[in-house]
Amino acid sequence: MVRDYNCGSEAEAAPRTTPDRVTRSQQSAMSSKRSKPEVRFRLRITKGDAIAIGPGKTDLLEAIAKTGSLTSAAKALGMSYRRAWLLVDTMNQCFREPVVTTTSGGARGGSTVLTELGLEVVRRYRHAESAALSGGKRDTDAILGLLR
Image 1 (cartoon, rainbow, N blue to C red):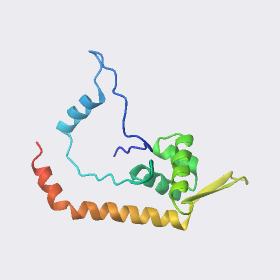
Image 2 (image 1 turned 90 degrees about the horizontal axis):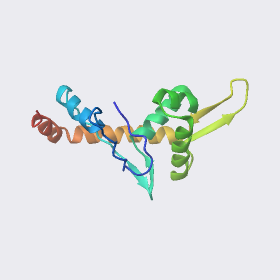
Image 3 (image 1 turned 90 degrees about the vertical axis):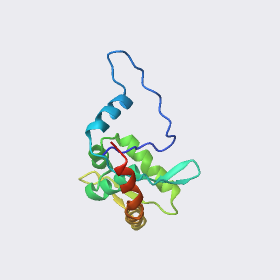
């Protein structure tokens, strides 16, 4: 599943095309004819201009919980350490308390862990995502039936 880790604007520059190059939208259209349709909700909660929590940030929090390391979590998700750090920083600024804490130094180089609030945010986000999916099942099934 492809996740969007964009923290700000959803706008993206259009790719340049040449006769021998296939654009992402063309690739997507071609693969959509062969792939099985699926339903994905992309819940985002914003605070001002910032996205406080969304699918990519939730994935990052889960990866941090699993690995105990921001570096390892970033690698697991295919993003740079800097990008992961910026996402965590945004979340920590948006919520009343930090969702992630770090310790530095030591023989193993420190660690990154979710706070109790971070664990609660992940739990509640996944529950809301699941509720949206099951609550809209009748309509999404009907839409799926209308696809080729």
